[in-house]
Amino acid sequence: AQSVTQLDSQVPVFEEAPVELRCNYSSSVSVYLFWYVQYPNQGLQLLLKYLSGSTLVESINGFEAEFNKSQTSFHLRKPSVHISDTAEYFCAVSDQNRDDKIIFGKGTRLHILP
Amino acid sequence: GAVVSQHPSRVICKSGTSVKIECRSLDFQATTMFWYRQFPKQSLMLMATSNEGSKATYEQGVEKDKFLINHASLTLSTLTVTSAHPEDSSFYICSARSSRVSNTEAFFGQGTRLTVV
Figure (cartoon, rainbow over the protein chains, first blue to last red):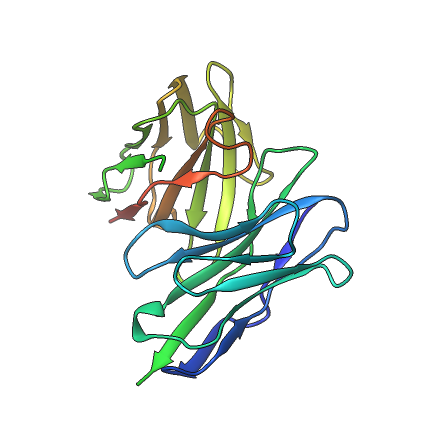
């Protein structure tokens, strides 16, 4: 079964500093990968996704993630964070061949320091 | 984009009563709906997957008689927590997927915070 590991439960970072949120998944089979963001007291929103093609995917608000098949990773990065990026970030995986469940990691709380 | 609406957003109920949570896809037909449970400061745990017109498939460890899921139409799925107890207090989130909208992406509701007193 698929599983997702987010090594950091919480990441504090100063405003305007770069950040990387780590994500590794368990299986080497073909997968779809996602990053979801959950702002305080809200539901989940899709931040970005990897389906196929270019291994580097970007969101409209400056985040990017790179799919690395050999390392089974999909780390999320942003070169300069803003206070509004404070949220919980969830990495998720879905098996391409089964196309049903989306399995989530435990989440990483991004805490922006002024 | 596709919108999923979940109702109610918050509910408080007495121990022993049942609570129904609705999940609606507003502008698309959801062929598959998922129900998740999120404990404080933890990830979303998939509870069950339901396809319109068929019985839900529950994940291991989830009591199907406790958490009743009905997916009666392509735009509505309901989760009923029966005989709720304080340990059932949690954040419940639904998501919906449509092959016409996206074969890969699921769209999430806003969540329902259930408190059992």
